[in-house]
Length: 90
Image (tube, rainbow, N blue to C red; front, side, top):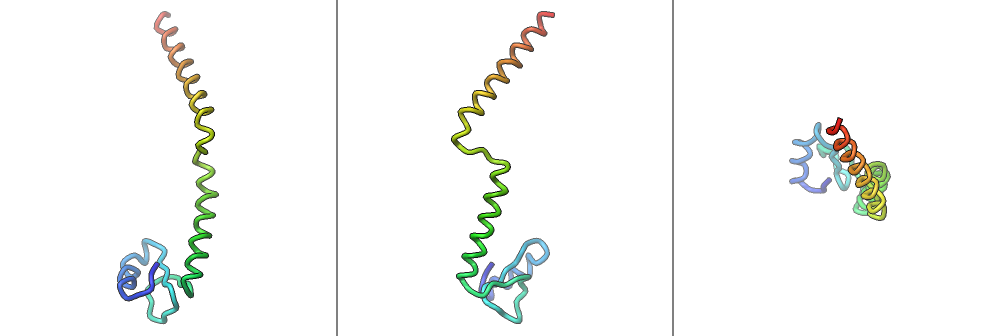
């Protein structure tokens, strides 16, 4: 995302490998998309952050859950160790 000539060089290089966004309309841009101004940049970033947060919530664990998950993990490890110890006796 950018608004000047140096950004156009990056847009040209990244065009197929990334989403390129020009800030401010230009007929000669190599960017795939454009936003009109900084206010729209802010709205775009906020929208991306919301999507990212929703997606991340499906794979990340809140810090408040860590003690409960740690206890579950410790119980599984203990059960696995007990099983391994019992199986060596057989």
